[in-house]
Length: 126
Image (tube, rainbow, N blue to C red; front, side, top):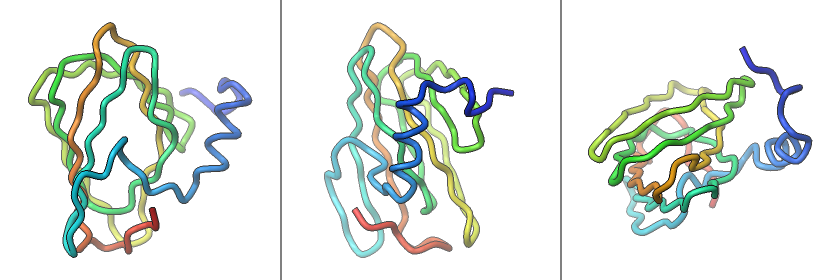
């Protein structure tokens, strides 16, 4: 298992500074009383910085690609996506997940993320 000791100092500092960052996508494209819809476009070699998920949500990959994420428990995970891949997440009261997302592929990564505001946790401020 990876540990924080293997992360570059700038990454650990960013992690510490973004513990309450609720911006889970690049652009908030719609928000209602019940949901937030995010668009995420990450060019090759770029990344979405650390952010915390507290609401139930799902993402759908609109393009194929590869990514690397650093997680709050110290893990570093690489993933391969195909267009249409979708993953759902549910958080009990007090649970959350913090991570970043780096495009390590050769094409832009494009995702849509939908958060459900009527979850066990209150939405984080944006």
